[in-house]
Length: 281
Image (cartoon, rainbow, N blue to C red; front, side, top):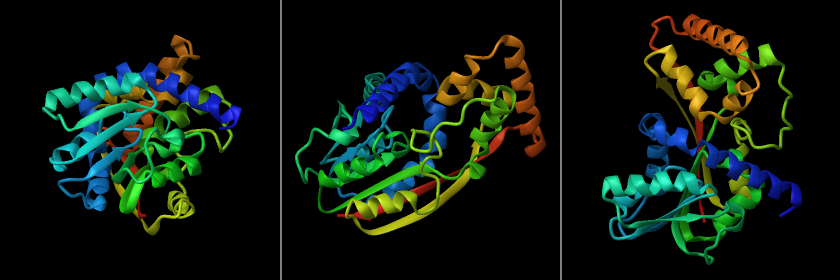
């Protein structure tokens, strides 16, 4: 891997380890709103009871732990770059009484598994953060058995994800943050229709299909929404760390105004849009 990509990988590892306490704090809430995407991935994988499954960039353990409850005579290997996130995954496995899984800290671009090891591979919201997305797709395909299935989800376009853009657009309006290059990891990097499907095709997967899922994240209040964004969403936390208290309060009030204009019911049930891509080896 090129030095600049290795640098991005290390930055990603540091970021996700740093944010693992926030993800632990909000894990029940986060896993609930991400569940539709995980369910769609699981449905598309056509799992069998005896399957060996790889869950890449699984963070706090999903959808890998749910998959483990399905492949009762099989096994799930849950991987992530950040040990801090996998600590939460292991705790979640213990809470759920799941024993047919293991966690492995590794880079998706250098998976430590033999060719054709797994019957299925899942990846929920990981691709956007991989330094080399095509290499990641090829590695995931490499460890997949012939006839195996692979499915991944990514966030759609910004206009489909007001839950992110309400806060980030307000921050950018007030702080004029530099625009990151398009090849740098970020939430909407894979949002264009067909983008992830093209990666699957380049990785020599067959019968590739793409499906959009939309819905609402129900925060219940603006305060809950604000606290969530400032605990879990890395770009928000990074930007707000550069703001003084007066600016933070200004941004918060403007975000609340924006949310109230779009969702006057005061429940902060905010739109999201994701893309699920499926392929076969």
